[in-house]
Structures are given as structure tokens and as C-alpha cells.
Image (cartoon, rainbow, N blue to C red; front, side):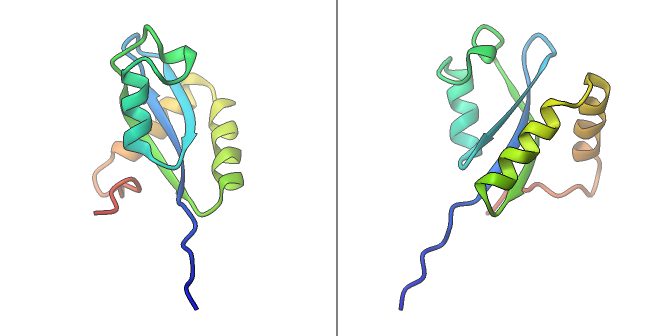
Length: 99
């Protein structure tokens, strides 16, 4: 019997060229960042390129990732900045780096 592995889901935060933050959901972080940079991502990021990936969280289900995306979108700018600082701290794991 063969088991099918479910896709991994991610909530992510980008820093746009104007310093603003954009939060999104995807199953492929690298592809999604490329789409944003190419002007094929969200309307919000068009004209705010290049973007920089500053935070990623990994989830086993789409609903969990989308719930976290919504939660982060409700954060104040100061709270988003703290989230980004925490993920840039030494010793912080990189959930987007699967090898």
C-alpha cells in the first residue's frame, strides 16, 4: 500500500521595498516569492518590489496555515516587527529550509 504525502503549507511574511509587510499563504515559498517579485503575486506587492522573505512558519494543514496567516495579518506593525526580529535571531530555525 502506497501512502501519499500531504503537501506542506506555509504562512509567510514579506518586507516590501517601501518597508511595509505583506503576509500570505503558500505550499511553495520560493515560487511564491518569485511570483511576488515578478509582479504576478498579490496586487498589494505589485509596485512594492523587490520583496524580501523575512518570516516563514510551516504547517501540516492548509487550514492551520491560513488561520495563522489571518492571525498575523491582524498584528500591529510593531508586533509584526517583533515576529520578524524573533525569526532573524541566532538559533532560530528556518522552516523553509528542507534541504
